[in-house]
Image 1 (tube, helix red, strand yellow):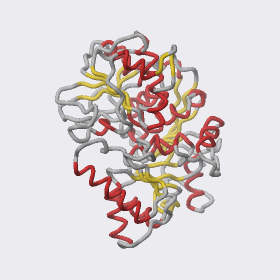
Image 2 (cartoon, one colour):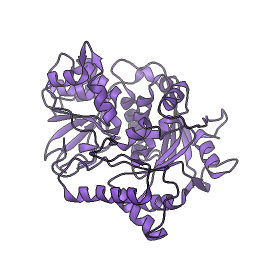
Image 3 (spheres, helix red, strand yellow):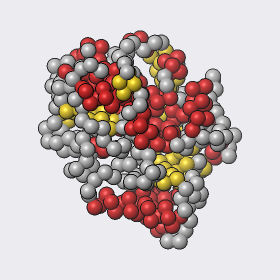
Length: 429
């Protein structure tokens, strides 16, 4: 069996789980946030009763992060709904904005706070929940109706996905990152190339990546239609998880004779920095081929591009240089926010490097403009603006106005593009 099949078999109490099987799976964690949380709560109360209790108050994790730093009253109402529910239910893990418990973006908060463990099943009301497959678990996004059912029962009926394997071997060239790897793969197979499949990533290149870079790869499995992205846990994974939680976990790996829907192999030495042009994540071009494409702004942040490692890469490019376009810095979590104020390159903190380069003052940790949001959202694109962004989706209106355009890139490519005011291969600066 593949790693995905093994995890689902365990979660269903079966000896095996074959692609296409419909099985009842026990959840280890259910996550919801301020966008989908009220809807999930509504389904839960409708189906189980106004006075019903969640199946496990320590396994429901609620993380407001999308539309929180805004004057919009509808957004405030959503968060108030979550606060009321948390109080009623005695939910243990609630990361409330404006309090010391607040953390930031759910997909980075979950692993930082020890909610992600190998061998487990994590459901979240967000399509990018597949991020956490980087920790060797089955993690996938679900809708409010399914989440309301999980909230009441701790179980969900799902179809076992077939697995596609992507083997990347070799050493990555300078200037090439995990974001370039996953964009190249999505460009190859298309946004529907892995529909309802488990995208399993393996090979020496993947093994050489940090846990944070692996998160970037799994995060964007959904952009190829994947049910989940997953990477087998190794010593790096285990060390990371044990640094965040003392809870026990079980590691799984695919059998050598596991069956895959397809297997694609890549030579990492042939990868180059790439960008995904509007309006689809599979509209992938080599950054060097787009060097004359002018831009209006750069956005470095989100669950995909707002981790501490992303900011280190951006700072390495921006050190001693000035940006030519408005450049936004949005740390994913409070932990990342603190780190960019202490981590140094050449004797200067990352924040100092960003400020001296002319970037905007870092925003409070949140999803901010990644999902557009209300008109007062930090970094939100205006009409006709073209933005190079480290986010994960570039559909029309994704980062604000429907007249704007979003170009997806790595933190290094985004920083290099900010310096020239045009799409730029980071190796050129």
